[in-house]
Amino acid sequence: MIAGNTAGGKLDRPTRTMLGVLLLVYVFNFLDRQIVNILAEPIGKDLDLSDTQLGLMTGLAFAVFYTVLGLPIARIADRRTSDRGKMIALALAVWSAMTALCGLAQNFGQLLLARIGVGVGEAGCTPAAHSLIADKVPPERRAGAMAFYALGIPIGSLLGMMIGGHLADTLGWRKAFLLVGAPGVLLAGLVVLLIRDRNRPQLAASHHEDSQSIMAAIRALLASRTFVLVLVAASACSFLSYGKSTWTTIYFQRSHQLTPGEVGFWFGLWGGLAGILGTWLGGYLADRFGKLDRRHVVTGPAIGMAMAVPIAIAAYQAEDWRLSLVLLMIPTVLNSLYYGPVFSSVQGLVAVRHRAMASALLLFGQNLIGLGLGPLFFGQLSDLLKPAFGADSVRYVLYGAALLGLIPALLFWALRPRLNAELDVQAQAANSA
Image 1: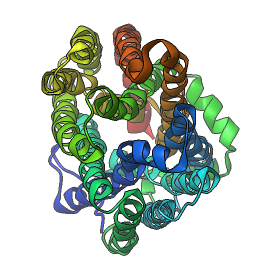
Image 2: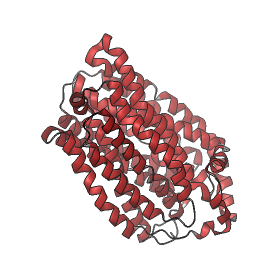
Image 3: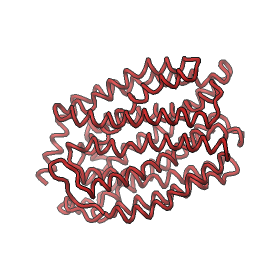
Image 4: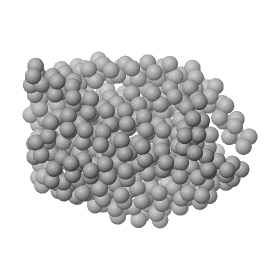
């Protein structure tokens, strides 16, 4: 159950419990979302799929429905009468059941529909979760809290890689989906018990905003140039992250002849740990140095993205998979610094009544552009390069993906001067409400 407040920047027990439950839900979110990456190669062989079809199945099919449905669901979550805990529980039950159904697919079309179902369910999770966190955690602790929630990304991806790879080697990809999806349905009942969301008094004075249309809310958000720049930078990060995640697992299998289980263990374990470190570090640095100058909330992501480029290229050039794996841990840490700073900045840049909608719009860009187009785009490039490079085509695709990391680095650097002024405006508006 959520209590209302924090005092002196210290989180009370109900708020810490809420964060712990939300983290667990987000772990399942990414476990179910990302397990398909490690299973993509055996699925492709079993169902005779092209790289383009693999990119479509792992990315776009999920992302279109995830992003489009996320906007109206977020509008509901922003209403003062909505129970965001029950919304998250229902979403968890749906996406977990659809993950299990992926294991029953007999052809590409059926698998595509099941992945769409996963996207439909997951659309109801993060906007509501971000809104809850922003309501319960004070601004000076918000980047760390958002980063804590975002730990579900590397932890869920780690578990998806390791569990999925092991199950693919021992039981096959179909049973992997079935065994991973089932526990989430049970967890949904626990979420209902532990997260009880009540009417939000901070919205009482503006209850007429509940009737505001989705497009009116979107226009209000896009009126902020700083919010737009955050949206573009985060979408660029996501495009590269999802694209590289999918095709790096395939790269280790094709260029280094590892099995799905070996890739799931080694890359899943060490890549997951590196992602956890980077996500936590990004939130810590943003909270610590953002207190001195809020431009520094995104200084870490800007520098980290730029530093990661040459190291990632060297990693993909390595002929020994062990060296490649070790080198990839460094850019994984550096590329993970942005989660907490981005999501905390967005919640501070918008009015309270638009918090879930702001999160949904950010996820719309990240997932439609990132998850939807990243794996598909790199899959198409791989198909184009196959005549020249054969099975090594994925390696050359990843060279280009690494180099493109300079784009979000420049966007984050350009964002720095804008943060102070707009965060101050929203903070003053919230205090006077």
